[in-house]
Length: 128
Image (cartoon, one colour):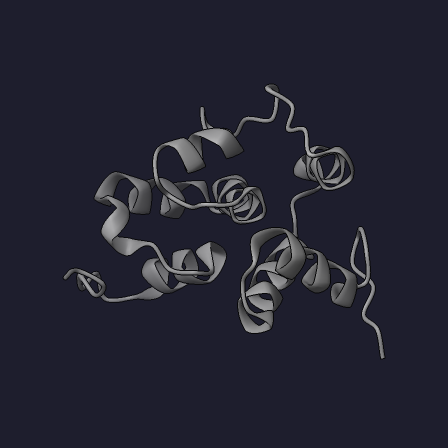
């Protein structure tokens, strides 16, 4: 059974992410689940990118844009950049704390690790 999101059925999001980003179905599923919960203020910009490949320069959250996340090395794709934007929108203090700590904390699923970090014991897991 197909589960409809605000935008597309989850299966359509997964297939599109796999095709665009060349990632595994498992990775795409994690990204799609986060995008299914995208903050309403980001949905229009995401839909425009999905349909045209363009990201509005006005798409900013706390000074971050999808392009900045990529250019600064936080992620490699626009889809994942939108999950970062979503984390900043929905959990700004936790997301900003992770961003201040540095890229050693990147995980494939930003919303998931922001929640883990916020709930965690403050240990520096992920440091290599």
